[in-house]
Image 1: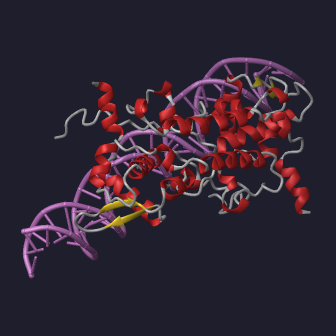
Image 2: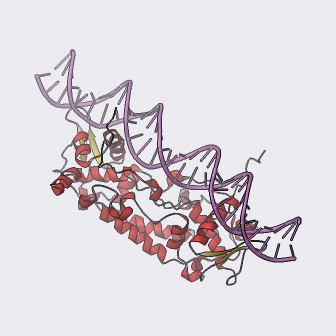
Image 3: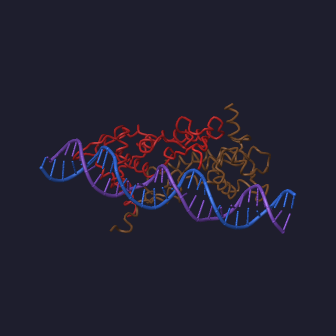
Length: 164
Length: 164
DNA sequence: GACAATATAGAGCTATTAGGTCTATATTTG
DNA sequence: CAAATATAGACCTAATAGCTCTATATTGTC
């Protein structure tokens, strides 16, 4: 039988808060890039976005929901419905997009929850290093707009043109 | 029954290559920081390191093995054995440490395997952005040395002094 | 030479997450 | 009303993080 609180200093690792630049972010950027290249406020159905940018349809639904909740896109239910960019393409940056579909951008667990994650943070020699790294990354991504990577044609179309 | 290669363009996500600044990296840095504060080439047993820096002992063994394979520490088997820093503390940087215990520093899957991970990389509008972000991070970490975060006393000791 | 203390090698374990799929429901247009 | 859409959310699977544990090889001390 082990003691209940065997080591109160040992931090419980919360991976759910860690950075993950994976498919979800990729797909979100693809979808937004496509919308960004449309005439302003133009509504595009999810099927069109999914097909042009090769995104799994149902998965994209969930992602678009996140983007709508975050106020990056407007959704239009019903027939002839779809999505449109809620703001100017130049005003939407990649840090926002990441945080809309994932979570607050956090390089390592110790930098989460207002610095009270690890019991040693008061005497930690490395935390400031990771903190600075995280700021570098966040600031860089905050400076890249969806407008700067707009994609009118979509990945599929441009790849096909390249193949032929 | 589905077709075998249902979508050859859809990239298979290889999370094993993605960045993860987690416990393993934390523990590796703690151990190296402790060694860095010792007299040069001084051999410290793993029990001492593990206790002073509060690292799970068996888990640390695996980590030290990685650090030894990477040439960052020398290991000394047998009685009175242990580990010592293989190079000057100032010459060991955090990028090396990360890659010694994890894998090559890769922000997202598309930046792995010489850019041939995703079928769309030839026409991708976002890959260069992530590439630049990855370089920013890698360069920053490559500029931080273990020597600059050396820790003679260890986390436990310094925290106890703070508590009292 | 035996013994104790160490590192090495590697199997195995559990909770969680990534990356989806699927169904049911509410909403809108023709 | 019917068809096409978005929304909500349950559910699934493979892989991973973060360990633990056992067995073995190596070395210093008596």
